[in-house]
Amino acid sequence: MQDLIEIRWHGRGGQGAKTASLLLADAAFNTGKYIQGFPEYGPERMGAPITAYNRISNRPITIHSNIYEPDYVVVVDDTLLESVNVTAGLKDTGAIIINTTKDNDYLKKALNGYNGNIYKIDARKVSMETLGKYFPNTPMLAAVVKVSEIMSDQEFLDDMVGSFKHKFAKKPEVIDGNMKALEMALKSVEKV
Amino acid sequence: MRERLSGNEAAAIAMKQINPDVVAAFPITPSTEIPQYFSTFVSNGTVDTEFVAVESEHSAMSACIGAQAAGGRAMTATSANGLSLMWEMIYIASSLRLPIVMSLVNRAVSGPLNIHNDHSDAMGVRDSGWIQLFSENNQEAYDNLIMAHRIAEHSDVLLPLMVCQDGFITSHSIENIELIEDENVKNFVGTYKPEHYLLNDKEPIAIGPLDLQGYLFEHKTQQSMAMRNAKKVILDVASDFEKMTGRKYGFFEEYKMEDAELVVVCMNSTAGTAKYTADKLRDQGIKAGVLKVRVFRPFPAEEIANALKKAKAVAVLDKADSLNAVGGALFEDVTSGMFVHKIQVPTINYVYGIGGRDTTSTDIESVYNDLREIAKTGEIENPYRYLGVRGCK
Image (cartoon, rainbow over all chains, first blue to last red; front, side, top):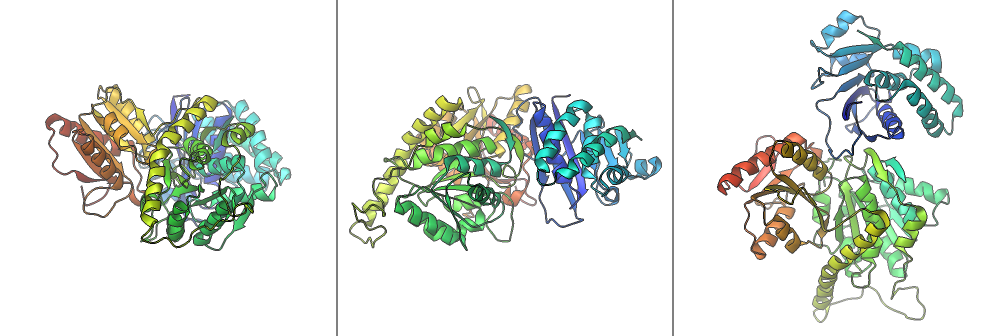
């Protein structure tokens, strides 16, 4: 992993982008990294565009500002491609990961000629097949780990069992489904 | 103990480990989570604190005053307009010499309504007789709270104390932190043994009576002397804290200051961004340094002035505008200290980050660039500047 990885999440209120950024911070923390996970708070309501951020580093992180030139961007809802400039500042050496079923031509066009790598995943399909409900954040969390190689798939899965046990202490019945969602998502990310 | 917590979680856990007798609080963004988490500790029986869910911040501070005067250890948390509503009681807490400890999560005071970070709330009570400690990150918000009672309750001090951290920027950001073992915190903080208190039936006393021309001046001066005494106590407590944790604290942190020519002075989270920027500039051969003020009240004027004497140009960053047609509060204090101690270094002020306006390393770099120009000639065109605002420089 490079010395400092900066990630920006775009989602809509209620989709769990903030939670996903915190879970990613958790997972990276558990593998010994220095981490930051923080949302950009605005007038929050269901469905409104929201942004969250992660910094992950091998060294202590002192910078305290939003991220304007991310290494990776995660788009949890592809309707945002029409309204938010999701590739703003995104490094060409990095990548964007989109939850979508749209075709590659549409995506390339929607990303205004972004020159870095583009990945997509059908997080709805993963979520419906494993959880029976639409929670896109769990598959997207796995997708960004896969693409950014912050940690190995196995390290990630091992750690997430513990995180889910903690997070879902009051509803342990959903842990298995969430783990399956991660496993399936790790295999479902495809390069555009 | 290696952990990852938000600044609010860190503050709540410090309070849990301190286990005060009374916590009285009213929720307000962005500090709401602190009493929220703490009330969970109360209901789970993790602490034996009496939690008073009051109907306003005025009552929160009043309840803390009552509890502390009775002989208990009281804590609270608030932000911005919550602190504004406490205003009357803030002065009463300090003049009654009650060492209440507050976690203040800094937020812009209305209006217009804004929930985001600046320091206008803390600056509004800078002359109220509270000790004010500022925290760069979750770690410092936690450490400062662990040190707070030892400072505030010291017999040479007996003043209330607030620990500040930046709303959202650190209060809602998950970051790495090192926690101290519960038992060590308990031993470090110790038990509160007030010399005079209302529930002592051996010594009936009155607290807060009328105090007119005959004595008020003396009493206020004693408060002022206590604030002066606090300086030594703050350093003594920091020294003990360093023995326990290895983490060193003083009145301020000097980052790459040994040979620094261009210095940025600031408080709270921006200091971290300034350090990052100074590192970047050092790689380019620019002698950049950062002076991060931790102790704003009492103000270490002489020590800061001395720390700046070798600089060629200094920028003081204020996250609150004093609206006085000149500079912000930190700038006034720093430059007044320099003048009194005969330190002549070109110094400018920036008001920045108002209402949560994000302050980036690019912004800080522009400050250092301005300082480079000033250092060349020593000439300052305009000492009262703004950083990151539209339509004004």
